[in-house]
Length: 325
Image (tube, rainbow, N blue to C red; front, side, top):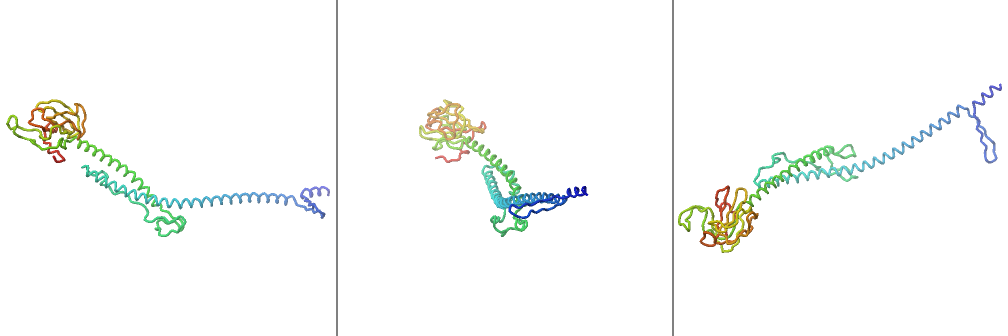
């Protein structure tokens, strides 16, 4: 019997409750199995509560993040449509630049650009704008509506990317084309500056280019210049830019200047009273190089003006772009 009692004691726990005030002491007997089950249940409940609270906090954080993402998404939608509209405007600007390049090519006397025959620039951009971020989807085409509340245009993004890439290539072509035109215009500007096409002095022509009666020999001979009568000491200006290859006395021209103008042209200024440039110096078009005189074989104050092209004399009047005053 005693052994059975010890076994029975081991199977139960006694919980004694002693109140602070006067009262009866309470005792409860709990089996070892029930006690272990209670402890295990309490532990499981605590773990479950911990995971529940942790999951709730994570969910709350995700909801907050989702709200922020939706706000950013709305802003990005507006910016994307605005960007698409700007791309469309820039496309129009590139069209105008292409037209300007073609006009400049026409003025410069060169052909149409290589891209001139290509298709016109890409078009893009929304026909309507997104409503305000918090506003309803009023007037927005169906292709821009995903679901009932979300607004977006994946097609527009792809089209905008294509247009941006195309505009990058087109901008490079425009840059190359305008650079080519600039080079041609500079060459033509240099050609114009090197072409003796302005009168070196204002006056009247006493003897033209071609056959004439020599005033000294009275014989008919070829006159390879024009003689422009002007008062003694009148400024003589360079008809074209170039390098002075001779400056001094030269029979029968008297005091004379020779200038190699470039592009096959050279000029001679004869019968001067003064020379204002030196051999080897560079003169600009319209620069004063001397003064009218009557040195050498001459009957009176005038300028003997010759133009040579590729080692052959040519009539200066055929090159002039201004009248003789």
